[in-house]
Image (cartoon, rainbow, N blue to C red):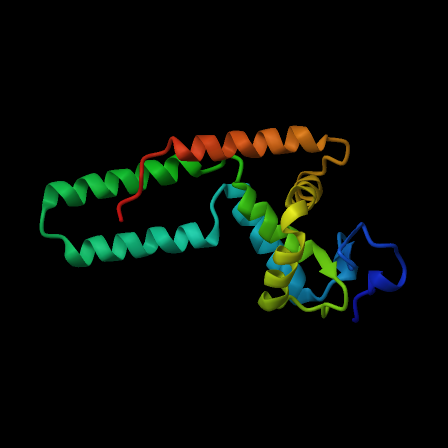
Length: 172
């Protein structure tokens, strides 16, 4: 089944420097592969962990296990990793994760309906000055909060960032 191309039936939600953006919020408006990317990113957001963060944690664990010479330092590193993970689980996700989700749910100009990483980079560079708008659209969509104000969302994201700054520093 071919998805419905909303660019043919609706007006863009935003225009920035001649670039038009459409919000793709229904499963029948996107290819299955794009839908699966959205589903996976939503799972990360709901857990409060990003794929990049989990990959960095995995690499820290591997590196520390391979290079462990000082048991005390190894133990301290593992405690820091565990406390950082525990502090992030099931709390509100970072703004960058909502931006990634906004990339999935937004089409720009003549972007293909399939999810292509190079298009996500283009979108982020175009909307950098209006990033908050797109973060808020993704936030509203995933949490079904259509009437929440942009200032409330941004305050919540700022609080999440502050909480993350207070977590134990991960070993280098």
